[in-house]
Length: 436
Image (cartoon, rainbow, N blue to C red; front, side, top):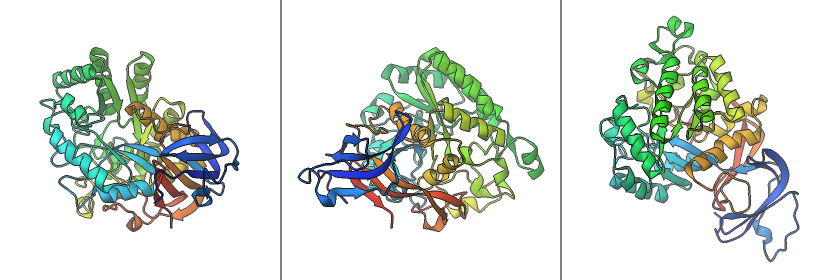
């Protein structure tokens, strides 16, 4: 690992600038953990007194981009450390080019008190080589009845508030929580689903689910949940980020909310951008996620929404599950997939297919989540933290889930042919991962 106070020059790189929307050949100088200068040519002349020879790295023409900021990562401490720990998740994040993880509060017990949050912050800083920023629950126990002490939790370091997939059914409780959060300037991360309609759904309704005999949920449940929450945003003035918008029918109300000037942003997951309902095939439970995989038309609509910026953020929605939770009949199996280490190579499928260029991809992976959370990361500019990922966008490989650094191996991409590998990850100018 490099000394944080030593300079670092990464030259001969293809630099991704999501702010300017361009990729250029250049070099980056890092000093005191921050980007000191960005050069628009690959071989800048810098005196060896400023940057010694052993602090210069030739990128070999590979891609250097802002590190990924991943909103909505589940790390199973406290309660289920056998599924994922801060150490294993941090190693997976570093290997995947993720430099900041925003953790979910759906642990056991939930992160709903300043004391639990302080434990999480301490564990994250001790065990993970990347930055860890925690979300806290919006209601006590994520039960949807009584809101948490939002102000105290913010003081303790909570960057946002969410009950995750436990959608608050009582609109009075939610409106009070939104009003209180709005007064404090707190960000709420909402899961857009109508809880009654979506209860028990294992697949998206349609011919495929019917042929497979799977309990299904209409994409309208997402649309209805988003409509309700947008109405409450209009009423309360709350700041809200919708964690997963995955259905074409949910896009028009999202567009109207933004056009009307409401303080809303939206995310989607790597799985809903790269897989569809047909991938479930013969009840493959590693493809069971929440919300369920959508139709190909939905997938294409969501890709277009990311391209235009209507959907702001792409996340892994990293959800570790052990083998016992997945090796069950599809209806009974746990939802979720790991994604910290696989997200970048999986999403590079969209780059290679011509659907999204690299600046658009990193706008959604780095710049937009940083801005939404009030962080100064996600930029390829002087003064920004030197949180960077160096990767070979062309290198092909076959994914072996047993080589993943996460404790849980529940990925739908086991055996998949992917193209793009992380070569190195830097956090504050420190090398936290180097490919073997």
